[in-house]
Amino acid sequence: MLIVEKNTLFHKIAYVLLCIALFVPGTVCRAQERNYHMSGIYTYYVLDEQKKEISICAIDSTEKKIIVPSELDGYKVCALGYESYAYDNYEGFQEMGGKMKEHMEELVIPPSVRTVWAFAFNDCKRLSKVSFPEGITLGYASFSGCDNWKDIVLPYHTVCENGSLSRYNTNTLQISNSITGEQIFYGTIKKMILSVKKDTVFSLAVPWVSVTVKELISPKDVTKLMFNFSDGESRVKKLYVNGKQTKIEANAEARLGYVAEGRVSFGEIDTVEGAEAIRFAKKNKIKYRVKSTSTAQVKKVIRKKKANDFVHTWKTADTTILSCRYDKKGKTWKKSSKKVSTVYEIYGKMGKGGKYKQIGTTKEKKVRTKYKYVKVKPVNEWGVS
Image (cartoon, rainbow, N blue to C red; front, top):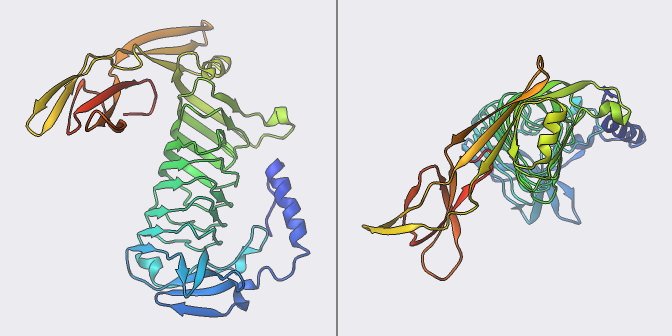
């Protein structure tokens, strides 16, 4: 039975679902009622005969890279593992079968798959890379124990149930929407990247349990960052806020009428001139830094032919960082500034016609490339190198 641990909105929703589930018989026994079929290295069962939908429950392969098919025997592959739901008792459910557990290092899941059921890839110790489609739901503990999986990319509209991911010490985590499941991230996340698809509001702390995020990068088009309902003491060492209009809200449980189970603190906020994030930093006496670049675009780029390439040079644009730290004794803000190397985005095209496309970034004031025409844009953003 799913245990309600905290008096939060999300637990109340889970509790309602649990009560409904008590009147739905047979949820735990579904996996034992299936007829199984084999097709090559795959074992599957039918989810819906009329819709021709199946779930793969075993992969008998010693290959390092597994590319799950979108179709088998005329059926659409819509799920992986044994059928389960958020209100089930998970003790009776199985992991996926087959030799893949001991050998698989990379998993590619096709767009046809909507769900990875509970425990499906639990303890796949060699697994280090997973490619998900948009709109997928990751069931309870579906990738728990996959401790070699350090770089996680969750595409738009990924839904995570409790404990669905490898929990500890993630190198990079990229998300395109809020993750509403709880008890998903523990330990340390070295770099967390927000990637805007449609949602511009990100609720971030709900799935955290005493997490330390060393770097969190928020792009220009994010409108709000919320750090509420963290379980335990969590910390963001460096928060990079690249949007002027991005608002920040943290530890608002008491204001919303809930008992706080934890909190999120910040070591430093790095942002741009005139940003809303500056107001948040000042109010909470958090150290902040402001980056400013002298020009939006380099106006003159000099081109020289060299062998089969072109060498493009330009004048250096100045980038300054203003650092502000609150002095508790003097109750004043101490400020200092310094010039740093400017990062340039390089855009190129082969001829006069056509559109420019980005070809890279550099801190140098020249670039050698096959493109005859080049535009250079100084970057006034944090987290770009």
